[in-house]
Length: 440
Image 1: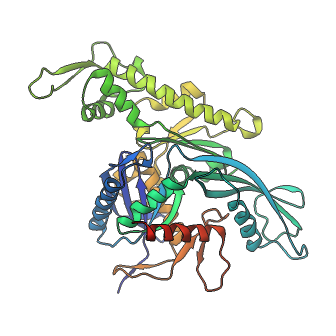
Image 2 (image 1 turned 60 degrees about the horizontal axis):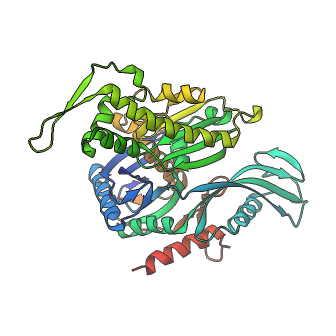
Image 3 (image 1 turned 90 degrees about the vertical axis):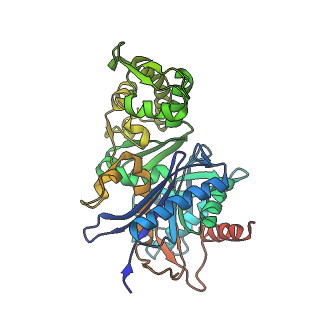
């Protein structure tokens, strides 16, 4: 029986759901074996609000990906976003029993697990614990303390928090669609893996992922994640404004935005007109492109300004926190004409559009290299990184269960062994699995 070492990323977005199957080739690039997409019904602003419809949409995307690749999907890595996501900075320390021994991975695990015990607001759960810098016996700015001597190990953490109910709803949808939940990852982190280079992360960069329902922000500096935020507006509000402003149906508004839309009103002349067929024998409507781009411009400015407030909150004007690589735009919303120029104009920062093609094998389908699929490709990368050592056979077989500690410095995969001490994250995963098993 042929053994195929493949992984699956599932992007549950507000406008579309994408299932992407892939494996790592011998050059370390990702070879996409199959892709399925379906219209997302039942998700609003990144949060599931109709379980039944979401399950249907997930099944459609998964079936399409399975048909495309001829493989059976078992476990998936899912992205989480939505307006309930928030992040905070936290410092913690442990005192080591024996400072004569060098610091090892167990010490880092212990420190990370301590952060998972933080008391959150009612109904909130820690999704990620991301170490930023370590201190050993007061010596600061240590990126990797393993192998060093010291009695007191401290670290600054970037902690990402989300609502328990939203996480459970996603888990419920995955389970009801007949899949296993391999791991949950914050979507801006997945997108940044797909479109940012290590140099950009070192220099300082803000990734803006404009989706249908939300706009996600992730800021990196010195190769470390510094700030994340989810803004509850995306491409859908632009479509909604066009629909209201031009008195047309949503389908027409979406087409208008994609074909003729521009974020810069000065680009269109007054006499440029597009005619839209009327409903059921009514007269066609004539809309000037200048008017259209004015509607789009107003809403895009609002979204970009909200993102810019978050970038300012991080403190990018401070010399030490300067984002030298500027801004990278990705997601379906980044395909809007002249958006790059508008973002540069508002923020005064260098901007480029991020394509996830850097990590894809050369013969990949052109369509997948679109900013539209940045999150899905990032989730697939996450799945490969965490589960690459877990071969799945073409016949549906389950091998020993693995758990992924996303909060760990390396995002390591831990084999469950009898008698192994369980981390807080392991217990949380089990609690979630039990809850889903018992839910009606």
